[in-house]
Image 1 (cartoon, rainbow, N blue to C red):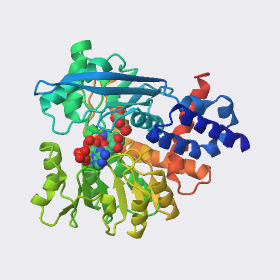
Image 2: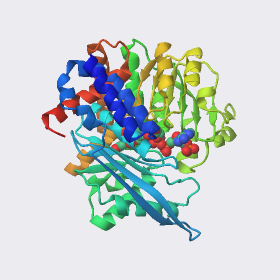
Image 3: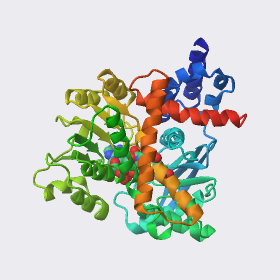
Length: 448
Ligand SMILES: NC(=O)C1=CN([C@@H]2O[C@H](COP(=O)(O)OP(=O)(O)OC[C@H]3O[C@@H](n4cnc5c(N)ncnc54)[C@H](OP(=O)(O)O)[C@@H]3O)[C@@H](O)[C@H]2O)C=CC1
Ligand SMILES: O=C(O)CCC(=O)C(=O)O
């Protein structure tokens, strides 16, 4: 017991000394370290072999410059990253994020979380992540293309179908993946397995676009069943209005729930009748417009500049689907007052540590992103399988596998929580279940 505490404190001190300013990475790493205490008590061999010392340090980090030219002829330079975090159970796998906030801390936190998420899917994929501080807002398609071409000109040196397979994340959807793939192909020839989230005409998988949002709702459904509860009739708040949020809205609505909010980085909408999926898809996917447009088209809706999490209305389920640390302690407290019973994260690490403590204090059941949003990467791994066998599976086949994977992630997290006597702590359950597979594999592979 004392040995475990000392080991964990030493690891935290190492992180503090090496990366004192990496706020997001420290948040992600400390959460996992705290949750793994009971596992280390049962497995002193992991301490002896210093498995966690290896796990917290990325295997490899690339940082590079991305020069590109704007439409007005000016020359721009952005910063690019790829963190190859852990390849113990398979090639590095994880998205690319384009957002002005991207820095090494954010890419490392995302890559670290990806190790456990990818392990939970049960598929042979390791953890990685990348991105750039490029701001897509207001850029023309030609500017996006030139940026993506320059990004891939450097990134292609480090990736490969059996080495590292990037995909989308914030700011990277079908358009960007197309430009990235096109540039990869010009430099290296056709190799569909190099990226996932590709268009259906050149090696993409059906259901990848829907996968993270649908998967979130499949996980939520399994969680509710486990509580002898059901989704039909529930009132839901969603934040964000991007890929994850839109397909969570679609599946939740199909299963009889009512989603009453969505947002973007400018503000949020509240529609007591339930958000209209077709209107949202038209604004966000076709026009690439702002969420405020919605109230011009739907009479019952209102728009405000607040965060979704500050709207004081009664509801049952919170699905944060925008970005990290979007819910603070006060907003989590408001959830308790508003009668929320469940929080399931579509985004990566959207709840601050204080918010999570508040959920637990008020017995709000909490499903962490690394379990609840694993559907996207799971279908990415299925896209890799289809590329390898030169086949394209039907939507129904992929969707069925996705549902099974999400139900198994819930079951594994619940089983780990039960095994370690942690009640409904699905956060610790997910961290433990994700870790155990990677730790066993690292142990078997010797000094890593
Ligand atoms: N796409 C995927 O397959 C997966 C994504 N995720 C996670 O889900 C989350 C959303 O990703 P995704 O839907 O793909 O991204 P998108 O770029 O499609 O959408 C992001 C949405 O979140 C909003 N948003 C982003 N950053 C901020 C911010 N700093 N403050 C307020 N709103 C913000 C955006 O608003 P605006 O347009 O104004 O910027 C937009 O509505 C991220 O945490 C991502 O890591 C997790 C697993 C897989
Ligand atoms: O599909 C993928 O490879 C990655 C998805 C992703 O970035 C994530 O799970 O956060």
